[in-house]
Image (cartoon, rainbow, N blue to C red; front, side):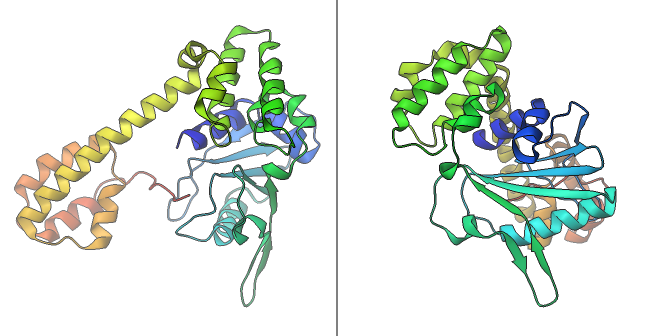
Length: 284
């Protein structure tokens, strides 16, 4: 999740830089769109939608090729939902962060009996680091780019980070660099080039910590709710359990109180049907 949050932070805070890199478009007239889509909701922690003029740039960051729902089908699914809602040109780019030989990282289309859907794939370990090193917002991605000498590349990135004049931006970019560099470099190597206190003071680092704490609290609440329900009603239907897992911490707390009045699993089903369910997490 730290990698997802880092990429999302970069894309949402530096949309013009990503548009320039991926679309060769220089503009500041960019709107970051919500990550929720209509119909049956989906939520994507590592997905960013940027509206540029009359087109949308859909970025999908992948740490690994593993996915319960195949990535190629997800790209088609996102495309149709975006098209339905915004009805404009849509550019889709999947950016694989970590080197892999999986076929998924080399697929650029979804093919079915009556459908072929294409999208662009970038494998960072094959990318020339030069354009990434030239832009402060893309320095974190540069740590994962093509090189014969990873250590030298990391030193170049560190030197470029030190040249960022604005202190807050330097802290946040440095933190993002350290997070993504962890996919390729040993932690001690990273520490030698970057001051740990700078990372701890950054916005992105604090955001990662906060999200981690929230996930821990929610997991505890989920475990308690499921124990109580199983004790009262026996095995819970998988569909119902999945609905419960999409609830927020506040909604789980309300459910814990409400279930005291339930006499059967039907009461639970009716209760869930009468509340607004948040967006469920999407698997990466």
